[in-house]
Length: 229
Image 1: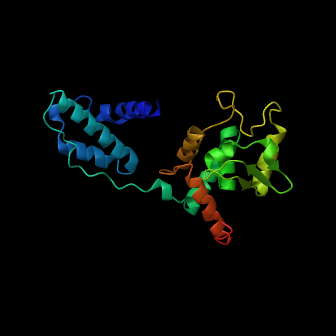
Image 2 (image 1 turned 60 degrees about the vertical axis):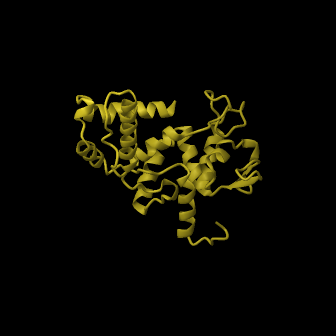
Image 3 (image 1 turned 120 degrees about the horizontal axis):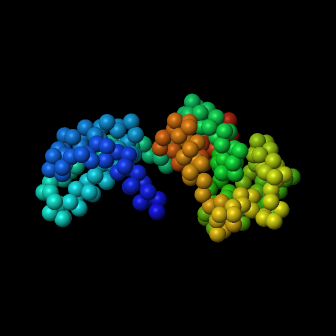
């Protein structure tokens, strides 16, 4: 469903405004290249629009509607690897400002705790109140990605946010991040909120998983040893 919505959005936002009034045979390679380069500030969007347009032309060729694909031979714009993306100090300040604005929602608090603990998304979202050890300042995680139990260590700020959440919690649920709209009974994703935070902060090509790298980077900057990290 997400893929369908993304494709529909790209067609409506980019392809129709630029090529909707042109016949297939009148769309030149130069026009496509110019369109592609006009979006060079956002390489992922530019490249996905180019791929989508190329797919449409390939289909048109198969249907005998045209004989040429003007997208062929146009090189994609180099993208930064979002998996290795590290926020600069300025970006981190903007991200934190936008994140704080979002913390009136459960999703926003989840994003903050992901950054504060460095845990994987599903490990944190599946956390339960019965596994919180306030004295040791940590949350026991029964099942991590590698199949072994682990812990989410809580710094002062994380403890403060979590204690506020405990005061407001629904006593009928043990989930730290409960959800009435999920079959699992808890939040399973925060992508929409995370995307809103990044948009407000003016940050591109940054993923939720990147928060783990941001957490590690903050520890390194605080002179915490690599062994401890």
